Length: 296
Image 1 (spheres, rainbow, N blue to C red):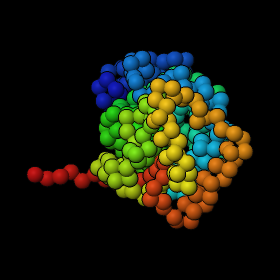
Image 2: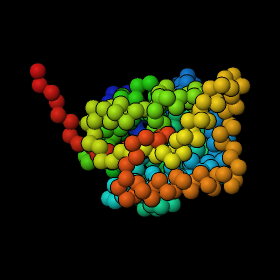
Image 3: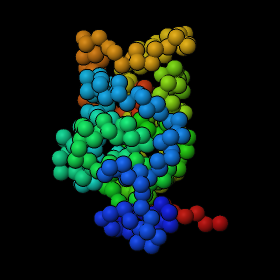
């Protein structure tokens, strides 16, 4: 169901038009804008970063391997998923992979920045796009699955966002998350990407379960490359103000193929039930269960 952001009325109209207070969101063409002011004031990401990302994601080992992991997890744990919402869809690279693998799935995607939505709409024009604040999702019991891939670390109020995702999912709905992991890997990359945290498994699990979810699977990835990643982060700390933010995006083609091979090997093990305890990132899959109100 849709949720009016003005009076909180729930309704099932095809259009975004509240039957009680007649509120409707602003629009940019066909895209509803649920939080246009936030796009101007938000510091969670640099909108200028979308263009270089869109140019290199499809060829970069990390993005390719993460897509393979996400698509596998959605197929493994979401066999009955008919509707999927991606929060923070960026340039649409994940959406493109999901749309290709699951062509019958109804896809909805949100992003704070219109710049990202423009790239995403070019990649996957069949998706229903919206500009939205993840801390105020205008849906209740609407989706079979919700994904947020390297998004939560940009949000100060990540627990609010998780509660909103819980509310927007149907009963037994599926949550898929990827996040950067381990404080000791913090570097200039995190500063440039506007991260507010890197997660530990314990902290992420606590926040997800407090929101009402039951965890189905949690594993690190980018495990085999962790020594290289750690050395790279140390070198970045030494560079300080001379750090070049796009340096990590440009990888020698041969090295790129080798690194992707290592991450594909990790996926092979994950598919067979291995959960890695450490790694540069973490994948978490959870299901919505009924919240139990505590009694005094």
